[in-house]
Each structure stands twice: as structure tokens, then as C-alpha cells.
Image (tube, rainbow, N blue to C red; front, side, top):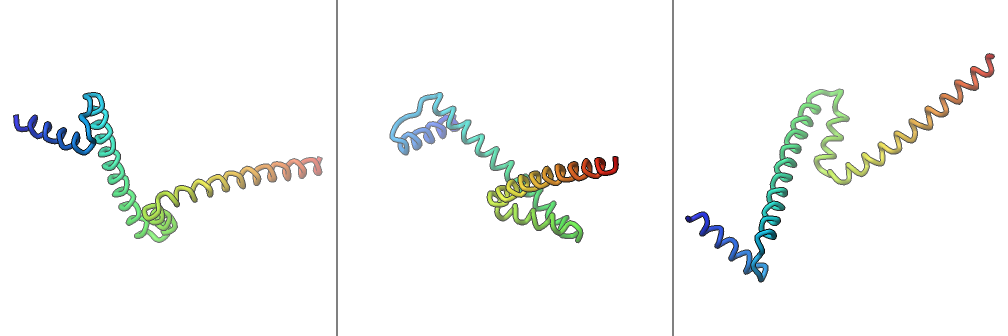
Length: 115
């Protein structure tokens, strides 16, 4: 009984804020949206905690310090690091493709010169 009374009070407060009562489907949609936001926030917290643990491990092992630096940058500046990582990945792929083409061309030239 008190739970339904509290829900009615919340709906009344919400109606006052929005200036109108929400239909049942609007209310359900709003609740689903809130639940999705809460789930996304929890997933983000869990991912961040795992990255912090991985960063701590990388800091303790000297050969993994570059990985730790990358993780720290990602934890501090996730959007910027993601953008720079994407740009760096595209550049590495392009250079790798160019290097492969040059290597194959060089090998073909050497084989033609030998035979």
C-alpha cells in the first residue's frame, strides 16, 4: 500500500515538473530509459575498475610501461584517446599496406633480375 502511494507521489511530482500527466506507455518508456542509463553507468564503472587494475599491473612490470601509459591516457581522456587511437590505427594499416606492396614489388624485381 505504501509503495503504490509513494509511486503516486512520484508521478504527481513528475507531472508537476513536466506540466502534464504521462501516459502509461510514456511512463514505461521513461522507466526503461532510466534503467538503460543505470545499466550503462554500472557497466562503465566496472570497465573503468578493470582498466585501473590492469593499469596498476602494467605499472608494476617495467616492459609494460608503454601499455600503462596508454591505459592512463585512455582513463583520463577517453574520447580524445579513442580518436587518436583510431587515427593511429588507420595510419598503421595504410603504412603496412604500402610496405607490403613495396616489399612484393621489390621481391618481384629481384626474382626477375635473377631469372
